[in-house]
Every structure is written in C-alpha cells, then in structure tokens.
Image 1 (cartoon, rainbow, N blue to C red):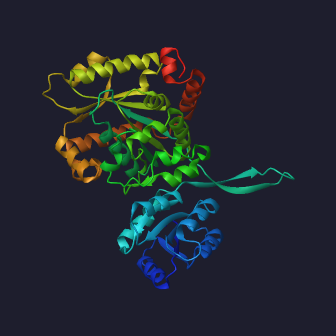
Image 2: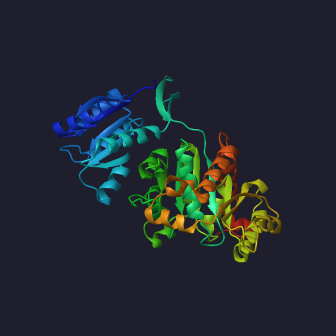
Image 3: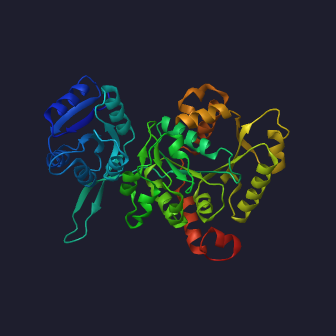
Length: 425
C-alpha cells in the first residue's frame, strides 16, 4: 500500500477543524497528522512535521491564512496548500493563489469535494528530492536541502496562420488529455489579446501572465507555482491577460524566459497562440520542440499554411519540428486530405473530423471534449489519438537543448524577425 497523504487542518474554530477531520477519518489513504488554530501554529507545525497537504482557513486572527500560506510556501515548499473560505470572490481567489495555494474550497463543502481536492493536489505536487549543496560563507560544510526536480519538459506550440481553425480547442484537449494520463502539464494561453482558454475551461481569471510579467526579476518555479491555476482535470493553466490592452506589456523575451522556467517544472508545456505572426508568436514557435500546425480543407487555409512552411525554411527549422494536423475534416470535401498532403508535400499526422456541434457545446459548457459527452464521438476519439501520438513520440525525451539553443540564437540575432529580415528590433 502506498504511503498515506498527511494532512494538517488549520482553522480558528475548533468545531470546524473537528468537522473536517470527521470528513477524512474513514479515507484509507489520508491521515490527519495535526490541527492548528492560528496561522502562527500552522507555520510551526508545518516546519516540524512537513505535511503533504495543509487545509488552511483564510480568515484567522493574527497571521491570517494568506500570510501563513505565503510563509509556509517559502519555508516548507513540499507542503501543498488548499485554502478554505466562505468568501469566493475573485479577489480572495487571486490572493490565495499568489500566496502559494494550489486549490480553493468554498465553505460549506462536502466530503467528496474535499477528498477529491486533496487527492488532486497531492497527485499533481512537484517531485521532491534531496541534494547536497554548499552554502557560501565560513567553512566548506554542506547541507541537505529540499529542491524541486523534474525532467525538462517537451514544449508544443499549437498554431495556425488562419484564424478560426480550432487551435484553442486542440490545445485544450491535448493538454487535458495529457494531464488525465498523469503527466504534469501546463497550458499557456499566449493568445494575449483575446485568449479563450479561461472561458472554454470555465475558469475565473484570478491570476494571469501579467502577474509573472510584473515580477520578471523574481521569475523562478516558485513564482510560477503562485500564478498557475489548477483545472479540475489536474491541468495547470497560465491564462492570458484579462484585458486586451495589457497584451502590449508582455514581450517575446518575457515568454521565452517563462518557457525556460516551465521546462524545469513540467513534463509538457502546451502553448496556444494567436494566428498573427508577430514577435511573440514567432518566438514561441522558435522555442517549441514541436509545432502542431493546424489547417482545414479550404484554399485560404492551405495558402496560409504553404506560406508558413516557406517561413519555416527561412527559420531553418528541421522538417520534423512541424506536425501537420487537418481539423474539421470532411470525407466529401472538394479538397481531400490526400490532396492536402500532396499539395504541401508534407505528411499529415492526424485528421480531426468535423464536430462543430460537439465542440461548440463543450466550449459553452466549459467542459473539454475529452472530458465530456464528446469523448466517444469521432472528434473526441481523434483528439485522444493525437494525445497518444504526442506521448509515443515525445515521452521521456530530453528536449531542453533545443529550447536553450533557440533562446541563444534569438538573443544573438536580435529576435526572430531580425533573423528573417536582417534587422534588429
């Protein structure tokens, strides 16, 4: 039997602590290792016993749940925090996430909701290992520290040079599909002005890329962990800025630096982009290990995709870096899938059949196709096949060198547009 999930309950009301304990007492894989009535006690117990999960009330006298969470996140990074509160407005949620919380439960909650949250956060926690490091200063003695370790991620950028091709649907379902297969996955909504990921996943825009850009001098895995939001599938999400005008603040250098950090934390980084070939999009294409290029069976899409392939030659991409996917495929279309492959002289790795009613319903309900009623429909099965293709091709591969080389190349050349057109920005 695997080790139990060790839980600390923190609430200033003894009856609340006892009620939560009772909800957990019959779960064979969960053990309540202690209770605390104040933020100060929570910090002390967390340091001494290092629980896996801390259930933290947000409103307490003295050091409140936000302050205690922030301190614990710094001192005991292995402990994952779930905030409990009667307040559910976006300001509370945002403050909790920025303080290091991994999930948020609104009181009153039921036993199933609580237990699901605990297991979900525990399953998606960063892997912790120990290593010996030498501290600077007098003497040369070494100390053992907890550090977060993970193999470096594979980065997939989903792109189409023709708007409305279904990139966001593919990116979301690919990311959720990978997360459901117990991979650590983050989805980045890099369609900065009008990103739809939040709506299509039914998530509140509590934090966004803006929270990282405003603190770029602090960029590291710890900062990322305070800004990502956790979808109920276990997928981690970095949302686009909440207002279109904020997009101008996010630069290509910001996002390339962010991708380098995300590589250290996740197995897969899935990036949804806009169809505009600006500096930001080009930088994310350049930094990707694989580009999922989406087209449809019509001449405007094929024309733009053909031009994009010409662009990739100018960027010196290896031919295998671009995976061509035909979305909304129709057997009776005037341009067949075989015609597309012949016209573009490229292999097609996947065709996703038309399923607009299913895709639209999934978007309206905020439930990904691979998690809802569309799972067993042709469109859902095709999206699952795409996920399996990604795992088969990329799982357990170390791809960091490609990303680092791309970053170094951009830095030396003054950016991707500069490399293409012989100018520096």
